[in-house]
Image 1 (cartoon, rainbow, N blue to C red):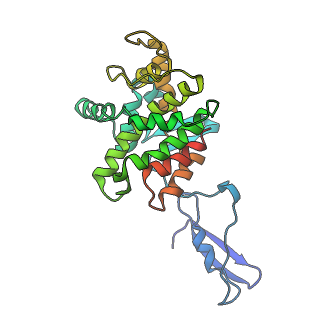
Image 2 (image 1 turned 120 degrees about the vertical axis):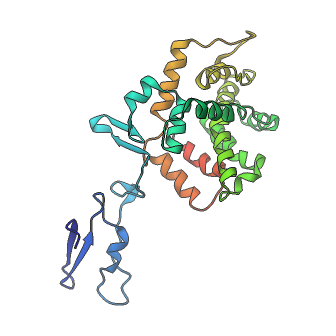
Length: 264
């Protein structure tokens, strides 16, 4: 018998139950066997807000805020922040290993070719009130992408999933920047794929009349590190929201929209 078990005595019936402990948890369904009669539904756990409930086992992120620990796929955040870029880190999170130089080149090209958004998406953003919160604009617009890319509903097709991944990583900064400029009444600045991922975001946020925006390298690097730090935070509110919506086999854009709301 597994030595890591929990013994539960039901004082209502006097029965004893043994439940295996795995990774410091017990399965909530194991409680269902605790009944007072055959017609009893069984014991359920009650945990509003998931304050002490794990919904999955993650091989991606380990986080311990009290001890200052954050690791992606086993790599400490300090190492990634000092030596990697956000796109490298995104590849690591998705595929489990840091990319080789050729893999990074292919990955980067796959992302930047999707940075532009359909002109009708601009019209969609224009439909929001001038003082609408930029995050609300982002949430609504990301959800609307499912109507522009109906192939996203093919969630069981690996190539379709890969394409939606490229699109989301590439287009969310564009939509976020457009939402910001919409709130200021400024014309939109289109992506410049000659720039880095973070440099391009700064370009779309702050470009004015100059022909070629040159991002401040200190701000560019600081923003990239910020993206790395927020790339994944285990099972936080936004991650859980996306997993719940995605479990209904919704397309990635419909799942991402509600998740983004929790970041507001």
